[in-house]
Image 1 (tube, rainbow, N blue to C red):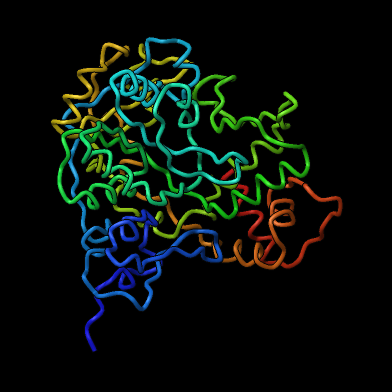
Image 2 (tube, rainbow, N blue to C red):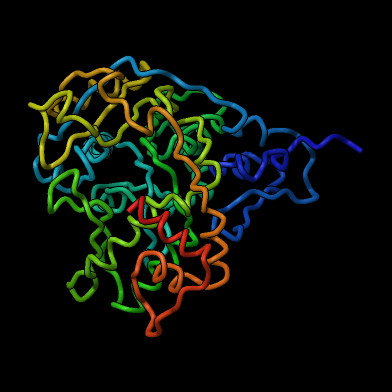
Amino acid sequence: MEDIQNISLIGHEDCFGCSACGNICPKKCIYFCTDKEGFNFPHVSNECINCGLCLKVCPVINKSLSTAAEVYATKSLNLNNLRQASSGGVFLECANFGIENNYKIHGASYSIDFESVSHIYVPDQGYLFNLIGSKYVQSDLGLQFKVIKEQLNRGEMVIFSGTPCQVMGLKNYMRKDYDNLILIDLLCHGVPSPGIFKQYIQAIKEKFGEIKKINMKDKEDGWGHQKPKIVLQNGTTVPKYYSSLWNKIFYSRFCLRPSCYTCPFTSTNRAGDLSIGDFWGIEKVHPDFYDKNGVSLVLVNTEKGSSFFKKIRSRFCLKESSLEECLQQALEYPIDAPIERKNFWNMFYSHGFSRTVEFIWGVRFGSKSISLWSKLIRKLKVYIKRWQ
């Protein structure tokens, strides 16, 4: 029997779900299925010819990383853009420049019903609001890599923003460096389950009504004190008691993709031409540059990234910094896997979303209360409170 040479060799705990393998397969025999935790994983059908292309583009195996040559603390000079953005407005300014100069902008967007997040591209500023802001859930890339390659081969210019593993998957899929492609990776703290997110949004809609807008990092109380804000179609907002639940779920770390706990991209070696995120700790290393409206960190990792950033730097108030001054978890080490993660999922499988979040976080969606189930679950509740 011929040796297997396909993506099935990559273990479940290692796969990032970047979709590069499914996009590159010449026989279209790689399909994605959702596991019990709500994450998509590739599967290979019998039509596989063992060409090995899926392994060649897999970021688990192949990584091409660069260390930042330039480091900046950054704030948009446009106050409205700064207030809209999650931190200092870097992506928004990159995207605005891109659209003004005929780039195709690819990033993560909520679905119309807000129950999922997928990568899309926007052709003009009228759609740019879809890509603004942190989503705190893994996005579905679908066949976006193929769309991007077609755009590049037509000579169109593209800006792609995503998690480092998604950026690395796209780089590998392209098989060569395109001068007309700018890659922006995000400082990532792990991606939560799309399945859990969908049930959270469904519970919100069932209790309060249809959703008009979600802002996972609303800065009404100032940057560094961001809170989720969910606006309903009737103009009212979901009470913070419920809108902040997703933050608690995210920071508990129970629902992150398994590969996040051993992520190789949580370092100063980066996948993108630029890396962007919050400049946490700016008040300590550059107190004069702190701004209650937000400060972004920008790592310029490649010559192409440097050339692009020079074109847009006039849109920002900048301060040069260093890797030593901006170090944070997403640049140093992966998120630890909680020791009670398995117990959380067992509770979820047995009792469902509403009962699980009521017991652990005290957020009640249903009409019936629940009782304590076991000593083990009580220990889980105490453990989770440490991370709230």
